[in-house]
Each structure stands twice: as structure tokens, then as C-alpha cells.
Image (cartoon, rainbow, N blue to C red; front, side, top):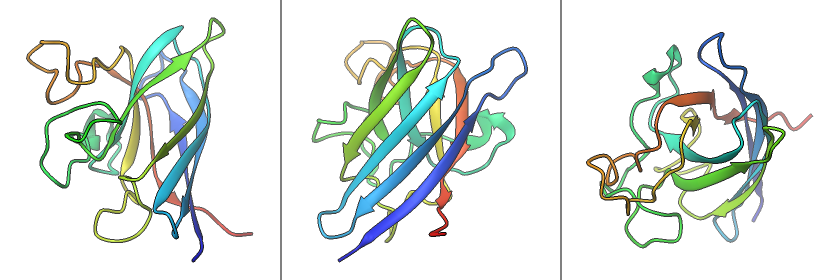
Length: 160
């Protein structure tokens, strides 16, 4: 049918970290697939958990974005798992220069309908997401991905 677009500007919640970036969300409404693409700078090299969180509230930095977006009340998992939070997008990889180039396609993060991610937040974590397989007490809820080092609210993109 058409294309829906949204954006999120990523920033760090505190002055001692300088994570920043810009992401675009493009949904093909005929397939239901949303493509997340963009660049995030200022990360430590390596893997970082990457999730959609339930709330678009950054009044207390990234900590007020709530838990992972989980409208079907599932356990945490990998993006390819049958059982996962809708917001579980796995890990992004920052190179030795601290830059992560993203290109993620997913069917559980629509920009319209009852499970829309518009107005919610995207969060980058300090540590790798163990994809629910780590055996840690937080594995099945957060992937034990550590602190929230960057976040942004997902909003409609101008067509201009």
C-alpha cells in the first residue's frame, strides 16, 4: 500500500558519555516490515544491546523509557526467536572508531496500528544483549545488557 516513516535522534543521558546519532524507521505497509537504519557515534567498540522501550519519556534520561516494548507479554529473546519482546532488536556493533552503522529489518515494530512504536523510545545499552540465553537473572527480561547509554523518542518524519 505505502510507506510510513519515522525518526529518532539518539543522545546520551549524561554529560560524561557522548553517544549521539540519528535513526530512520521505514515501514513498507504491504509487507509489514520496518527497516531501521542509521548511525550511532560515541560507543565503546563491540556489541551493544539495542531495543525499543515502552515509553517515550526521557524526563529522567534514558531510565524513564520503561521496560522493553512487550505488548504480547513474552520473555526476552533474540530478534529471530518465536518468543521475544516486540522491542528486542538484538545487538548493534560499534567499530574501533566507536561508530555503529545500523540496518535492521523487523516485522514486530510497526509504525501504525495497536502495537505501533511511534512515541516510544529506542535505547542503546552499554553491554551486549545475551538474547535471553545468558543464565543471568536479567537474561529473560533485559538480556542483561547493562546501562542505557543512549536513547531517542521515535516520532513521525516530515515528508518535506
